[in-house]
Length: 237
Image (cartoon, rainbow, N blue to C red; front, side, top):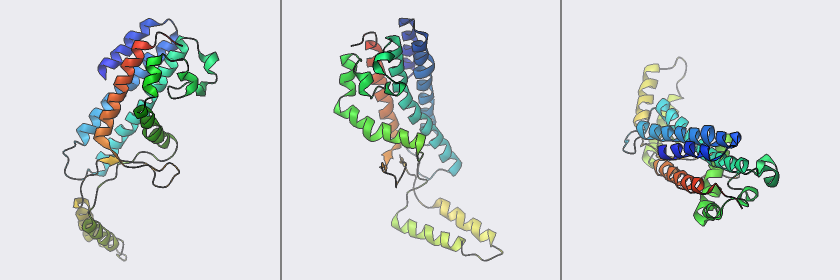
């Protein structure tokens, strides 16, 4: 990630178009730095070897890093698209600003063949349509990405619900000592959840995605694409 960040900065010398430089230097490069730090935070706060559910505040910190990672992952591709279109003065041909995107035909029509071949591969098209766009759109516009606090077996779920019913069944004045004991037992039940999702209900309802493997895979994808793009972005069709 650091190497790709440095390459973005080096490539700003290839163009005299200030706006194109900005999308590489202050767009893609800045986003890559945030993504790298967000990935570090996830693995530091929530190592794959974690054997107990995280406290709520720690889980919120992991989700903050996940949100930053995904929104900037999407944004890196948009910055590359803008840097390319502006460098080659293609905006009049591409049309309105909403057509500037690595994943839209109006921009792809002018990309070098090596780049379009990569973007049109079956694996890349599935990654974009089933995961990147779906989860980014949910994060930005609908239901934010969510890491469930724990995973419960059937027996653990029954015990958790029984404790919950007891906790809410106290009449006034509440027995706070007993409530604290119940809450402590509830916190001790279950295993960490290592996946994330967004909505259960909307038209693009999500499936669970494994957290740690996904952000490694996403990082590899943006590195692979970034190297290919920056090696080819000097030309256009």
